[in-house]
Amino acid sequence: MAAEFDDSDYPPEAYTADGVPWWRVETEPGKKRGLGAEQKITAYLRFCVGKGGTFTIRQLRQALGSETIPDDAEHLNRRMRELRTRDGWIINSQKDEAALDQDQYRIVKIGWYLGSGLARPKKDAPSDMIRRRMLERDNYTCVICGIPSGESYPDMPSKRARMTWGHRVPGKRLGRDTTLDDVQTECARCNETARDELFDPVTLPEVLPTIRNLPRREKALLLQWLRDGRRPTSLLDQAYANARRLSGQERAELLSRLTTMVEH
Ligand SMILES: [Zn+2]
Image 1 (tube, rainbow, N blue to C red):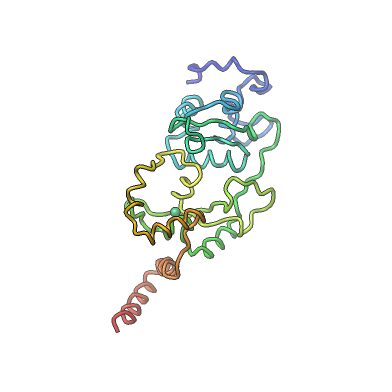
Image 2 (spheres, protein in one colour):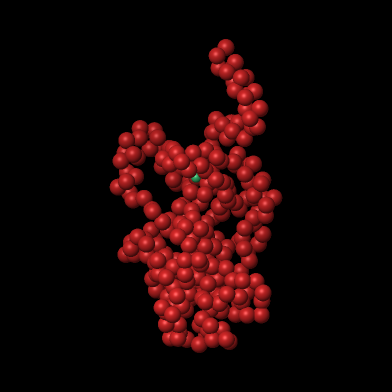
């Protein structure tokens, strides 16, 4: 497939000492470990798209191959997020820049890239211990939409919520170890869509009718959640989330006790 592309027309810094374009390098020179998709994407965006340039995911896939750029929205969203949060890229989507097409992106700022000669910035990911404590603190419930872990989405009953972590201040490089206060529990869907909205964004005309039909009190509540960027969980939400995490036996015991409490 490499034959489809003319890789000969880039500035000298776009090539390794062996004359291979950085975005086609499989193993970093002098190192054993294979290069991940993210590094290749950074080189491609730096040398083939450039600051101010636009690209689509389809172009990325054509240039880098479907093994590097799989047709998997969630997977790709994670890659793009790493570029933004870890590597310092600013990449606009239609959400940031109305002139862009729905699937088009513009490079506003070039961050770290493969071939820059610099070490890649360290990852901001919290430790396993911090993740565990975060989940406990947030009751295994997404702080953005309020769905508990393992619950089906109301608008997508076949999909169960999987919890992950997100930064409380999106896009901010910490420059220090991530602490419990820096992170919050987010379901994978909110985590992917809240900031990156790379795929299948909904439009205002789709969303507005439901919102218009809400009672005024609920409209005010929604406004508050959107302003805060999170939906607080009530004691009831927390009780529900915790009850769902009981073992089968203990949940049966709880059901029996709760039945007594409610019906007597
Ligand atoms: Zn959520």
